[in-house]
Image 1 (spheres, rainbow, N blue to C red):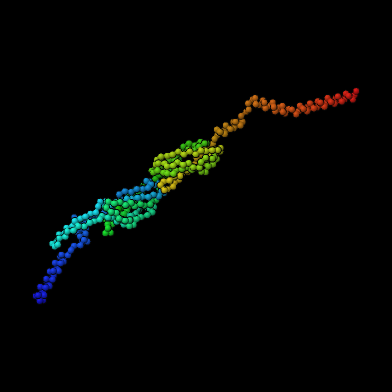
Image 2: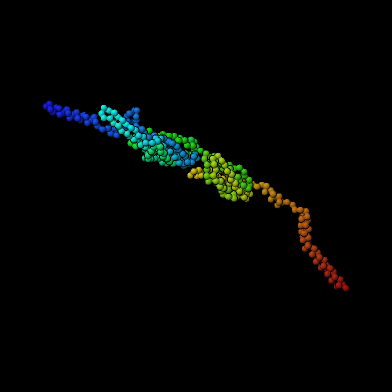
Length: 332
């Protein structure tokens, strides 16, 4: 190769290498460097379960309720970092910002004994120091107990890169009912105690009477209203015309727990027969009359019964006298 050509070739090569060494560093390259650097990793959003609420507070067997899970982004603000990278040539000084927004890819609840009506996909973005409420409609099983509902949320940063997700267990108690206890039963009224054995209040409580035999109940239902947890109320049914020995009625309580309507177990109550009233009426019906009244009745009845016979005797005596008078007249 010609000497001049060699000089030109090596000159161009040197210029090319110089420009290659002076290539600017892009923002993406800086982020990649930060993510690979152990002493300065790229910050990530931090989302956690901040709170949860169940409505009603506890569920009765078979209840439908709403479980609200509150998520919060624990990063307080946007992160700004100043970056300085020193190489042989050139030196890079720049600043980069991390929004700290978190994207909720999906969120759901899992529990084999509960029925879960909904889940969330693409639930939105939570900014720094912000919260979001996720509401789930759930239905409790028929068996009482404490159940652990598993809440799961998959989280991404704004580059749609998966970050640490959430796995959180929420305890839900299923228990409680309303019971009826007979307190006092007479031939005139039935008193029942309505007891709320649940751990939350019940509303619109009323007691009904049905299958009434041998008597009449004045009212078909008695309203008790709201009964707080662990408390009770007394309801009174008036009884009329209980004159048969086999008198009875069936009572049950109907109430609401949240949006759920329930019925208590029916209670059959035997209404006592009014023996004292019957005995009083019997003694009055067969009580002997006073002596004066008896004698007066007897005299009047005797006089009235003997009156027709006395008239007959008088008529016969008159006919006899008339016959004798006629006989003496003929002889003379």
